[in-house]
Each structure stands twice: as structure tokens, then as C-alpha cells.
Image (cartoon, rainbow, N blue to C red):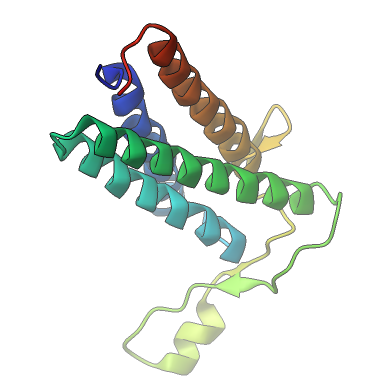
Length: 161
């Protein structure tokens, strides 16, 4: 009566890849995050911590609970991404003002004046008309559903405690 290993590892891989992609797009390609972009990162970070906890646990019931919590965090990030994509596509108004990245140290006024202004309602990049927030929505929701499906199949097979 064990938690399916694939579900356990996907609960770690999905948020790690998505958060890693966001960080690479920021630090390698200069796509600075807006406030809503940052909101999407926190649940992925929580999911990674929960999945690592599930991997470290010896108790199957606790591992299952932690994986379900990780799935919930992945879903939350995906839903935030869906909302953010709707703001970018002009389907509805966003909740935030524009964001900026100001570095500490040096002349504060120069840092503020030279910091990039990042708008939540403008997608800085898209592929096939899908923004990064849209991809987060699709991949997070899809990944969470896949993990839940694996866990449900494991239950039918008598493998989940």
C-alpha cells in the first residue's frame, strides 16, 4: 500500500521545472517578473518543499498527505497564472499596479530611476500566442491533474494507504 513513486516524483519535478524556467527567463533572458508573476512562484516553492518532505518521509500516509498538499500548491499557482494570463490578454482587470525591481545599495534614486518598469497587463514574451503566465496555467493544471490521476489509479490498484 504505497504511494505511486511517479506521482511522488512528479510532485517535485513539475514545480521545480516551472520555477526554474521562471528564474532562467528572469536571470538569463532579462524577463523581469511583475507582481503577479511573483505570486505564481511562491506556491511552486511551497510545492517543492512539500514534495521533498514527502520523499523524506517513511510514513506512507503522511507522504500521501504531503503530495496532496503539493498538488494543491501547484493548482494554486496555475490558477494565479490563469488569472494573470487573463489580465495580459485583456479579458479582465488586474489587482495590482505595475512593479519594478530596485537593487539595494548605491544611490537609491538612481536605482529607482533606472529600474525596469514591469507591467502585469503586458506579456513580455509569448509562444503561439501563449504568455509565460498562460504556460504556467496549462502546465500547472495539467501536471496537478496527472499527479492526482496517478494517485487515483494507485488507489484502484490498492497501492495507496
